[in-house]
Image (tube, rainbow, N blue to C red; front, side, top):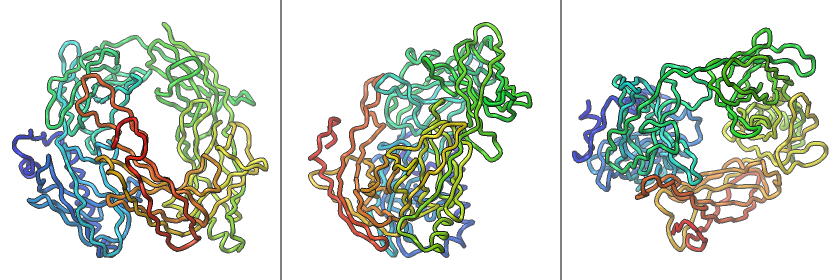
Length: 591
């Protein structure tokens, strides 16, 4: 089986252990099974377009590499391949029966780094717009062998630590440790095996720091020990950097962990209604370590108050903390109460008697208006289409942590009401896939148009809000034209369409990726004048030939181009946007 999976790799490159590749292999097999199971349904949707190209590995043809197309606009859980094929001995592939649409094209090659990842580690695909019957050629992919880091995790006596979770870091320009993204589809390899060994492969070139354990203020046991960096320090200032280069393995990157059980303590708090002083049951409470005066992290676990309003946390190390009632991810039936942070300090004993005075979440209500629509039946129909696609979210004024988007239920008459919001500045968003064609153009409150988000306060209602929407089905098909140069390898380019009469800075426009051929499609636009902004970003994470310990380079400012167009309520508009590569000053020297 090793030979089957890795027969495309040149003998000069080390084979990757199949055990550590198992997650990616399973993912491929599951994808294949799902594609086969959906053959009858996808056959009905199959089109006449075809996509072809070539995959190279280290500049040479890469045989038996899977290339797949997945819908670009589908949710992550529903993004199944609609077409897939393996490359031949010349590295060539061809995907047929492709329906018109927008797709992500990507290779499935665990252990190797694509040019797309060199631009943005979180992105391993290329966007492509496919027209009906179109024959797209030369969609090529370039792979390079990833680097490997291997070592062993032990305690102070040399005993292997099994299933210990590892993390990779890179030091930012300000000296802070930033978590490096996991290798795509390979999260399982970030655990030690039954001998305490680990092997991280498919890493992009650069300088890394590796650690094991947790930096949570709560200390539980088993494998959840204090965060320790290679070679065996809890201080990121003393952590030793590891240089990773393509196709090479950095061995013996061992970590020795002090797992001695420290003395820890418990804290108990009581949650009461700020108005009645009565205990509150089922209120979510969390705590965090103090970062600076009046500011806390919320890294500790959360728990719900009992029938007496009490909540208890155990396993806290000595230090300064804050505890707060705050719903992080509101769910149906969860009481929405919020409090201020209550600071406390753990020294040499349990902490008791803390009181959280909580207020119910804010209520936000108002009316929705769709501009230019006066027919009652059409208005009701549009409200129904918008329902389920409009959400509200924001960042808590107390915790400074964003809360999950909450749906805005819309009644037949356009009225709406949202309960359980923390004190925050809220923003509204329309999910384009759930409610295509809708554009929020104005938010009115207290008789005035808002130029920022809308402020709400826990315990207080916010009424009379008016959300003004535009609706349209127009499509803008565009082409990017480069002059005076080319974009760097792995550049990411996108287009934002913003209607010029939208003055609220919290309201976003329509976005679209510029695909591998310089094409972009903006769908579901309402009538009006728009400013198109084309932005091209260079690589964010690559650090070739950086000296040991050097921080990653800061991203260069994007190359941009702007253009105004007029869009009708329906139909298509064609546009060409010219990007002058060398005319813009670029301190990072991107030419």
